[in-house]
Image (cartoon, rainbow, N blue to C red; front, top):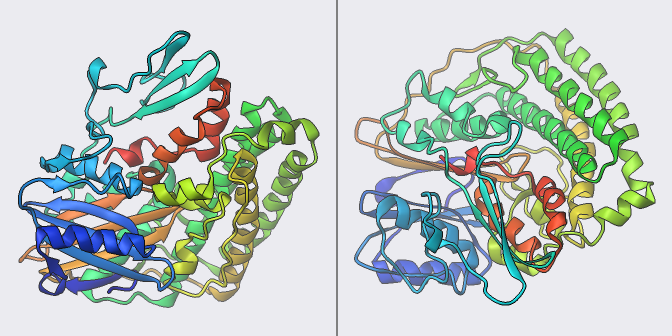
Length: 473
């Protein structure tokens, strides 16, 4: 067992025979653990299981020996991992209910088909208007009713994980910062935790607090943008217009700290790389309170407008049982009633955080959970500002140890981020695996459209707001 942000010698990672590895995984999943990461390093298959109740991470490894008997029928959360392993490592999988490649461009014959009188297909993308990234959505419909939605991603082929092999070097942190460009703080914090664990290095408390501050500021900016986007998709322009501006105001607070609105250059392994004066923190507090009050005024319109509520309620429902089966994380999981939050279950510092959950799992719940999380984020940030004094830049360079495995979880604004690294005999990355929360949550978006109106798709899509690039690493 590992605690979050810790490392273990490779020789001490529990190793199982191939069949025993599968049975051990199934046994732990039946007990309520989840798959946080599952990847291949040569002929070895590594898995990181998480236990929300105990706050433990369980790493396991096996040597690949022939065909893998799929876990997906009993544990749907395993399906995306199995498809990725089959595509990237050539693992042969038997008995999977849906074994098509996860990211490779598809032939027409590879798409799911529904036949019958009145059944038709609607294809959207992969090229979209505006700045949205490429992704293909294929609806099988009967009239306006969606019978099935198939989501195909992976058109970018970014190759970030491969570029990290042999790292770290001067480019590494810049790759990490752009793994999912709107989640710079989340992914960079996870990377720092992994590097420091591999080095056996404990950063100063002020560095941990600064990272937490950046994470909550990133959460507030993105949740504000999402609430505005949801408002725009139902044609409610007052909240949409205000939130579009206010998201920028929150991003500008990050620029106060480091000169970049997306926190690039702010978070680095080993400590603090940018000096921040106490006067800047006081100005941050003042501007935060002002912007939050304006955001409250804009968002409160949603909860008191009957036409808005009529559109959000009972739309795109994700039942708690489905969320649990799919391994859903983040606000989408919490809106369905699952208490999944890394800050509570796998904390690396005390933030006095309370997990916020919804009930119905609809668009309204996903919007409402975002707003309640913003209130909580503001309280956390104000406490952190009180605890921080002048921040002086430090030049610690953690020296990574050879032959170790480290895993780190961070609650990004979309949900659980997992980074895992394995070092070679020279203390370089032999393997580096990133799991963005979108990887867990795209299947949930497909599920909420079933038996709903196709016109609900833009609204449901915005209520999840998943990452294309974070899925294609």
